[in-house]
Image 1 (cartoon, rainbow, N blue to C red):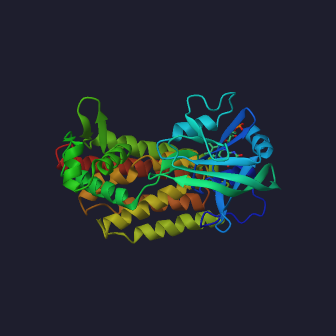
Image 2 (cartoon, rainbow, N blue to C red):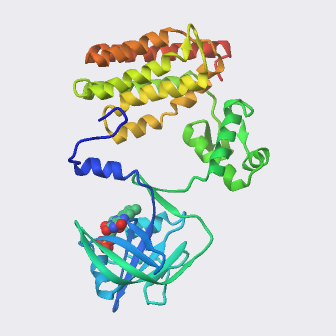
Image 3 (cartoon, rainbow, N blue to C red):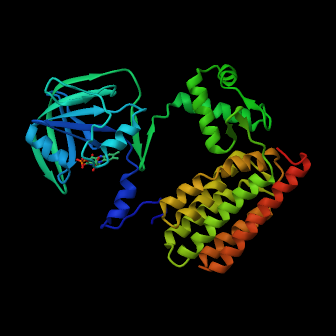
Length: 382
Ligand SMILES: Cc1cc2nc3c(=O)[nH]c(=O)nc-3n(C[C@H](O)[C@H](O)[C@H](O)COP(=O)(O)O)c2cc1C
């Protein structure tokens, strides 16, 4: 891997290709066809508009799936663009079954293609060309009917269904997060949906979305009786987070210390140097900037393993939140953090697994100890 995370090798194996191309976010459609009495349907994301004049679409379909033959024989296909609440329909049509349309309400379109009721948009196309492409066939279709309703699309990104995160929603989440982090809501406070919507001057759906993200961050929890409740921040929370980070990084050391490329170790050093200038003496120069730089340094250690599951697990640890709630509460810190992270960097550079593991353990112990000191000054909870 190069310093910027890219690969320059000419041959790209299928595992890497799948991983990299999964970053191309897409909408989700169900392609349908009717051939006499037989109906076909399959989930497809490789569907796109081709030209406006004449209006044309293209769809890439694995020639081994029954829908490919169905489209070929019928000479037409329907494109059902799914809405954000239709992930279950996408799952159903992505699973091979004798009765793909079980429980799905459809109507016949103008070309007779099955169209799924409540889809976000529909197009019906007449096939004008079929082009072979690897294992797939590319159907080029002239659009004969098209309609759309108001709504938001289902999305597909890195193997997961999701929805668009609108900038407005993101802004609401950030403001809600600030309120919890700045303790406008205190530990164990119940956050009533209507109240937070009013406080942030947004509608309930945006406030709800913010709360679900705060729950994923571990800042609030969902109590079956009370609703959303602010989580107290205590030593247990920070210990669990730092221990989890350590467990991941110790595993990475074993796997990569001999194999990491020189370029990736240079990048580790670069990230270390970018971090140390933000902690001078025993004070943070700019805590927010230090936090980002520190995260990027530790994330790179995990990235060295080139294992998307590990990277995702690391990303889910809410490290930044834990650090903000604890270290972020005072500009005072310790140079010892820089020293021990220098030892981590040097151990990787010397490809010394034992030294790297020892330094990572020391770093974890130091972080846990510092949080305890901070908590001590605040009565045990933040
Ligand atoms: C989100 C998503 C997108 C997909 N996109 C495509 C695609 O563009 N082309 C394709 O051939 N298969 C695609 N698939 C896989 C098919 O949906 C799957 O092979 C399905 O079983 C085919 O149905 P059939 O075997 O009944 O014809 C996709 C699956 C998912 C979950």
